Image (cartoon, rainbow, N blue to C red; front, side, top):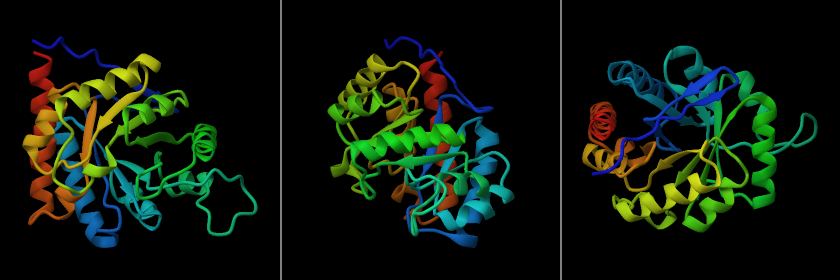
Length: 243
């Protein structure tokens, strides 16, 4: 029998994120008015199941969704570690904050960063008050990233992204343990290949603080129904784990 989870909170610049939470990454599948419809469904599910939901959005959608939603957390899909001034084509941290973002995902497999740029980006996120969520594709990389002290680490093996195959329980336990040994305050989101509520349930029960998906919702016949199924599974798994 697994021990009960000890819930730790991210208290950051007035924002509270506590496990269990869930991240939806639309990548470039969904945008504009269609993304807004999904975001409103996420708003409702967040309240219904008492689960924080992070939406990692296209920069062009941040302003609209930040103003049209109440409960979801709006994150940017990327950010460059640049100061105000020169940097044509770069995504400025202050501009994301001004548009309504509360956080940013960094170092995704589809937008990798050097360790030096990642370190600078985490510091810039701290400076402007954005929650930093950083992707790592192996236990070794997760340990290295943990030493940079982001708020959240996404443990996501690159080879499983979009495959419908999830990380096994051993990997979930090993990566979570490795990260917490470096810094117990970092929340761990276990992702890659999450396709339905059953995957969500299994991942949370294995000890993750959170999980998330892209294709599981974006490619579903009814994205809103799948979103509800997954958020319900988060709540059931967390409650079962903490009985």
